[in-house]
Length: 497
Image 1 (cartoon, rainbow, N blue to C red):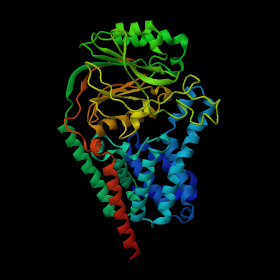
Image 2: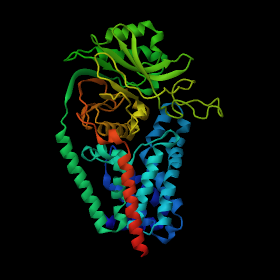
Image 3: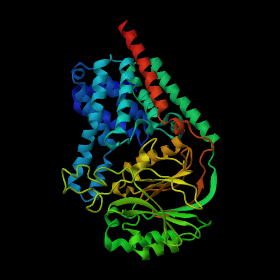
């Protein structure tokens, strides 16, 4: 691998901007659906290695931005597909170029401060890891947050098990240490990182054997109607789309069901305004069970919400949850007062209103659950509330992004919430990827991208003990940050001695 770095450095000395862009893009191949963690090592270590060149060393902020631009442009290219699907094809450059350019501003000071404040080698690798981890945490929280493709998501399920203790931010910190290890040129440090991750793999493997999948005895059905996004909100296709969902819901099953679950916005109208729709849902619901669908809900002041709606066999709306963490520009335009005539990307001219907060829905005959609509499930430490649920329901619609890496990344991200919380997650998608995830992150049932069908499943149990992450949240991450900061200061002091 060191030879590869040397070859890349020769290329970098001739074409610096292209090289640093390639390093950033290469690092993104560590994420789903590729899971090539050596690409992360080459990308990050290659970038830091080249930052020692005299021609690069005087412009670390500049090259830091180019690294971030490549990192996000390759990792998030699928967002441009969503703009095209929404009919805003002329805005595709904003998704493909504009958003990565903006997110790269987070990375620019990470590289710049690392190079200005620490010598090449171990000290710089440690400081870079600290600053990168701070950047990831900030990216997940400011401006409504977008914690997508954190470095910790690069790993298989065995290593993801450590998120039950230190959360995804903690695993991302350790992952970044490994990714920059070659640039440290310190054999002890490189060996230590490799041994650490071999140990994490072994511990995770043991944990998976310790907690086999246990079932609750509650049977449900996930429906994936795989309706193209261009047809989803067209009134002329409403009946056809509705009948696709009904057909899958009414097919004979092997066991009596307690709930049939449809995806986010599976019924693109206000269902309580139409007794025929409510009656049809009631007739389709399992005996003494429920239909759990997604769709808009009208508030008392003519506000509209994107919601999870639960209908019983008596055609009553017995429970609902209004999405509380909306997608900026997608579900509302955040600068509405300044640009009153700008339209959000989703259907309709009126902005959605955010619900008050997360909820635990408690319904007779079903274990209590936390509904999470679309990207609400990507936020670590913010997916459950009190009373603590027995399972999480993620209703989503990834048809926006076509056959791209986006839906695969989304699934990897949300399954990590199950590991962190020790609670199973049920994912119903209009088009990929519907899945049942047990309390340690195993995908026990799945419908792939573009598949039309349903899954009958028995709901997995939550873990019998609470995970440390569910009790202390990101405390372990901050402890790791503090410990790494102490090590950095000791290394830096030794270098200056």
